[in-house]
Amino acid sequence: MLPRSVVPERRTAPAWRRPAQTALDRTRSTPAKEPTLSAHRAEPPAFPGRFTASGVFVCFEGGDGSGKSTQSHALAEWVRAEGFRPLLTFEPGDTPVGRLLRSIVLSPETGALADRTESLLYAADKAEHVETVVLPALERGEVVITDRYVDSTLAYQGAGRALQLSDVEWVARWATHDLRPHLTVLLDLAPTSGLGRFEERDRIEGESMEFHERVRAGFLAMADADPDHYLVLDARLPVADISAAVRERTRPFLAQAERVAT
Ligand SMILES: Nc1ncnc2c1ncn2[C@@H]1O[C@H](COP(=O)(O)OP(=O)(O)OP(=O)(O)O)[C@@H](O)[C@H]1O
Ligand SMILES: Cc1cn([C@H]2C[C@H](O)[C@@H](COP(=O)(O)O)O2)c(=O)[nH]c1=O
Image 1 (tube, rainbow, N blue to C red):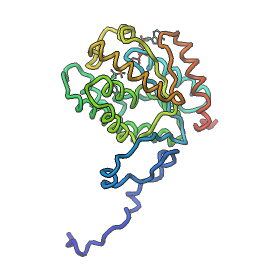
Image 2: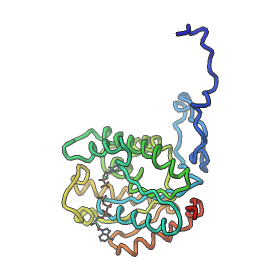
Image 3: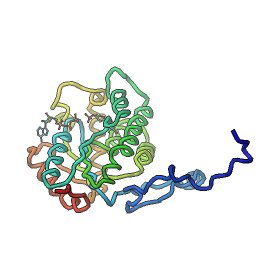
Image 4: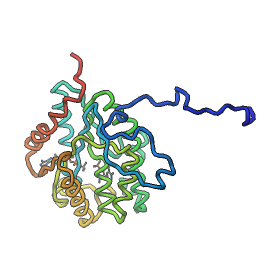
């Protein structure tokens, strides 16, 4: 090994370490460089939200059993029929490490977890998901449809658990590069109805009704605060009616997706 004094200082990263420009670099609200550590200390960074200019990012949110999976599949089918490429995905668990995280957070055998541990495990799943699945697909101009995203952690860990919402949000926004869906569809349903749609309960579904009521209120508050990016639908409506409303709100965004070559 060379002594430190003769190792030339590298002022810029070598080309192989410099990331290529991504869809995220071309978002509408883009601090291209991470603030320095001292900047973080002086002024906590705000999270204004970043929306990619390529591809379309649609998210389904709502309580357990509200119909997210049914509707995400229906939207993906329609997107394909319209001549675009859908990428159907979900949180937690749609990456190799995410599968392990999912089994930890959802398996009843895990038992009690510290609220912060649970929050960080979900955040880790999101970080991996955004970096390896969501962003690359948006970069390719695809229509990414995710069953749950950051709002789920804001509702379940932020409103449901005894954690400071702003802390949960900071971690989740940081984990996801503050990437936001162009549209979030909130399927609103009373927890008694949603949980009544199936018999088995995972670790989170097994929480009290008060917990699930706080989660529902958390989702509704987020949608209320930002109507431009949310579509709230009554999840008791017939499946076909919900699908039609979702298609109508999604259609204008397809202009920024890549058509499949024919
Ligand atoms: N609009 C609807 N009306 C009545 N039943 C519905 C409706 N949408 C979905 N369902 C039924 O409710 C159950 C749960 O639906 P689905 O799996 O799509 O919900 P989910 O929100 O993805 O659930 P989870 O939170 O467990 O992931 C399924 O049996 C599905 O057929
Ligand atoms: C993404 C995310 C999810 N959860 C909870 C919500 C559900 O109870 C489960 C996921 O189960 P699903 O059948 O796949 O919907 O996890 C959460 O608490 N925090 C999150 O960030």
